[in-house]
Length: 344
Image (cartoon, rainbow, N blue to C red):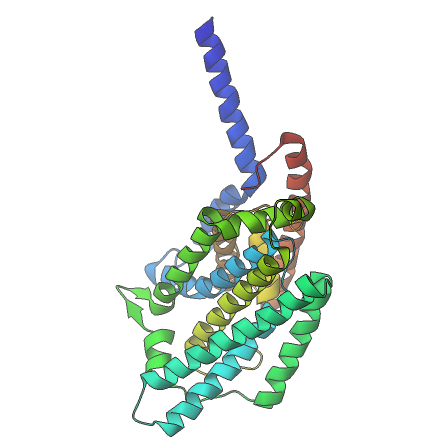
């Protein structure tokens, strides 16, 4: 009898764990497998090594931005300016590299270092502006980041005059942009330490515990002694800096500074994070879920390209996916409140 009870308890705990995973990720793993099967049947080149590497190259830029977006979502906000930060970083870093290249024509790595420094400065300043608006001025994150997206885009067009910046260092374009190590694109290797650092920040450090607390219940976080302003600003600075890094890598990939780069990232990064389990209300989400969300968005876009589905139709599909992600988030929130699902 005791064995039956323990077995029943074990089955109940297994069912509870399965339900918790379904609430966290929804049907995403199943849908992802279905998409892979359908696209492979539609075009046998989909799972080829060349296309797999191509998807890695395409997905790493979104992966970085979605991980940054996750930090802001966990704290109860979101960042609509990520696309504008990508474009601004592309122009500022490209202009810095060209200027240093002209001053030191015999050096390849000094201009790259200058571009990297310009990228970091751009990301930190953009994040500070967003964080100040949300944490200090206490303006809604939607309004702040929508406004800064317009400002950053305007600044980008002013300093670039709407023209691309060419003449980037050869090692930057061919080494970082299109180079490979052990068959894997260099951009993936360069992004990997950043992704690991974000994982550690979110799941194994005080920073992660505090932004979960802020997003879950800001009043309780205040009572617990959390410095709300500091951690909110830090989440926006980290998001913008990681986004700027992605923009810098993407500039190497396209081999020029582009003033209109990154327009698709605000929609795609939020969609990937929410599909992967992040809540629009904050305080909920995991790195692995966002990772799956980015893979899903990348597989979907690449598969539709191989099936020769027009870009206009792809925009419709991605819009539907975002609506579905929001509906899923509402379902998770309603179910989670009744089941006491964990925030982490």
